[in-house]
Image (tube, rainbow over all chains, first blue to last red; front, side):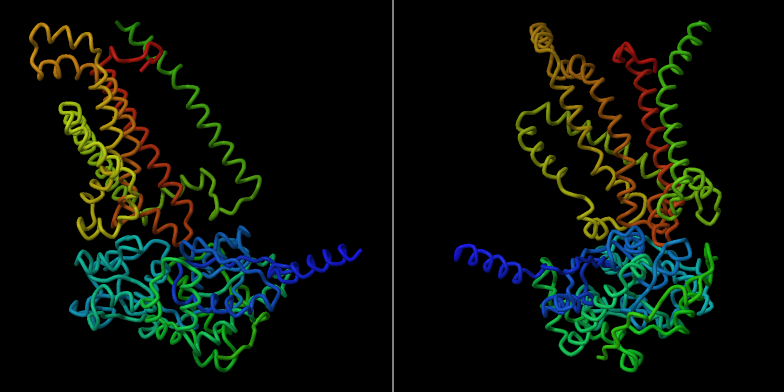
Length: 327
Length: 263
């Protein structure tokens, strides 16, 4: 009898100790390979925020915003990260998606070039060759950005290049510039040299739109809305703590994901926090979406491409699951 | 003569008809599956909608197709020549075989896509770099097939001509090389398809024009119809090049053809 009670007790203790016991399994589909803006998730994992919410979160490396949009539509993961224009484009093509929080409250679309390249404004890009990695949202937004700055979008030559090669192709002088997120600044400095990097942040030249967002399949909203709420609560706690201590977030991610360059990632955190934590975050909570800015994002996305199906801001996002956690 | 020609064409049609019918059946099945299951076009377009994407002038199909065609042809020719030269070197001299072959195997196992930033630094981007990248992917089967063909000449024949005081060069030119012709054509057939793959890999690494570049830019905007249209053209290119090799084999070495091959 005592043996049976002991065995039952050991079993119960083992089950209680297991982190996955009773937890809801969910997968987060990243938009890209691991970058510094993913570090708050790993900080939240390390601090047990997802566990507190009863979530067993798996994180899957991404292959571009378009790829993560498809995967969420196909229900291969519960939550995805993708830039807003790509999610909007997918929705207009019939994808059942909804954005539930922003990652980048200000889009980080940007051009990098050697400081010696004499590029001071968007008009200086005319006639230039510009490297653009595949699955990159800059391709979607370039026509709108060009139109806002009164440039013919065809006046530049866009050169496809694998993401690992974009710094090399600029450094080699094969192209004049590369479109890349502003948050990669430190990586560009590593290749081109400190003080040798020029950049044009598109948000400073008429393109203040939303950048990356967390989004879900609308079926998940109907079946388990609380799952989304719990995910955002844990994630935004991670963001809050990462904003206070970026080094801790980077260290958490580097410990969990092999092969990352800790210093290069840490050096991009000032730009990331600059884009992600804004007055809107301080006022409404991290990840809050403003309808007017989302409508502007839609207008810019379709400025030069007719959508397959028109979409309105209210259809593409919701703040219903907002954590209201402030930085 | 005319009746012989007609008979050949009838045999050719009979030979290729089953494969053509299977491909057509697969296309019909694909169309029906997309229509009946109401698959979203941006996930899997129907063959018809993919074909319709060829009608969009904004995609600059002729320019993109020609860029890929030049890369494919360049990679095919360069890998064929390089492959045969290396194979001759390997078979000619045992020391060279022991030296070169392991290096070639090592190089062939390296994933070329991982070397992308280095290729860009060394070669830049454009049609010539794509030809080089395509060659690095396509040349190895050419080396192996040609070397096997050269090395597999019957030893008795070689012994016989040596007793007749044939020089090393005569043995190579009159015995080994003719023996290798079927193997060379087998290598060229592999080369034909791998040159296409290799050229597209080159365009994925870095490119301004080409069907591979079009696939990349269409993927960003979820224009999956354009991706599939590009894939169709790439497949046709590979098939056409393969067909050219088969035809060349028939003209150059009809004696090497299998008895049941009509063409």
